[in-house]
Length: 140
Image (cartoon, rainbow, N blue to C red; front, side, top):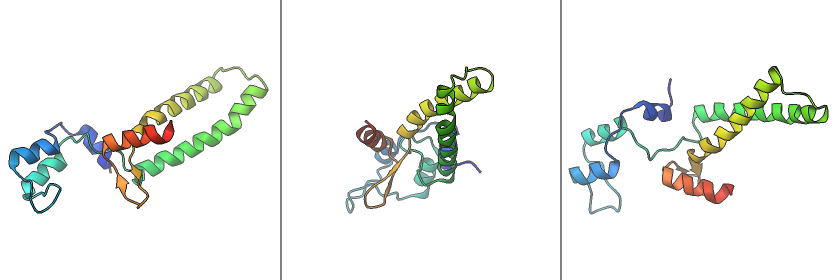
């Protein structure tokens, strides 16, 4: 079963949530945020393309990704010293393995930019502008 992230990537692009709120007049004076007052509006938002949702760090797909990262890290921890100490040429299996790990770690940097994070009060933040700012503040 595909994750919400995969569904959003394949869904057609629609208007942004804010544009839909303004056009339908769904702002409420009782609260500071927008109130979804009709189910049709909710369906429009959930079916449409939404660039504001980052990859959930607690999703099953992210857990599988993290397990694969750990396996690849262990592989690097064993093979990198071996190839450097004995000057193993990058041919055949070693060439493929080294390029796979290089590409994976390069893509991991980009994927981490689009992954949500957990706040100090244990809330998951998945808004892309906030996750990108958090990534730049904490990783560099």
